[in-house]
Image (cartoon, rainbow, N blue to C red; front, side, top):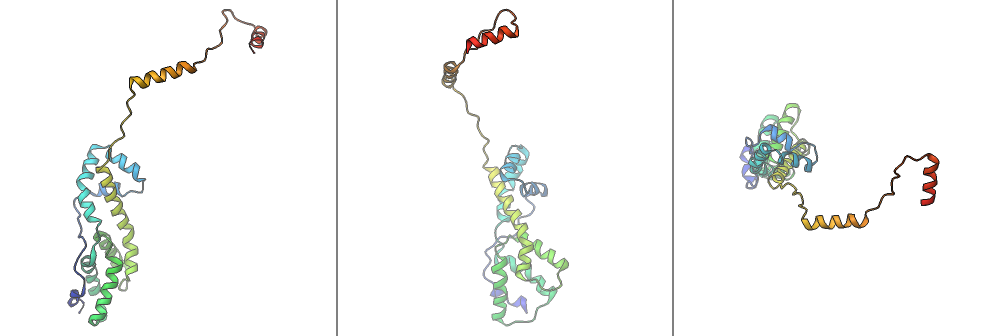
Length: 204
């Protein structure tokens, strides 16, 4: 039976789910489709959201880690019972688990778990590794993006406005004085169009 062949699975090296330490609202904002720089700046400049992101950082970093052989076994084993598989010898079971672990073991646990649940709702036959990977990868990307942005928010430092020294101000004033243009004199009395044209002709 399949459950008697778990000793053929390599020792676990992945991470289990770390749900509960990042609210759905925060995760949605951290994993949104906006540009990372814009999202980080917006959340980092909000004291409440910044504090929440920093508090969730460790959980998100754990959550993005590969589920490894243990995670694959935990999530795939129920499907073996649901869909039923022909019995195999030890070599065949070893090959079976190796294939699923090689393809799915790098995914975060939560991403693969969501993929398994989604497939179980509609799939008629035991899923191929590629089918589960296709369902899980978009979720995995969101988890990784959220973890990366939380890290960026924790390390965010707002730009510091450059302070202009008195020396700089004096240099600017000197430059303006050096290139300052003297405007033409304004006549004291109102000119006729003919007088203005004559005056401008003489100045040319």
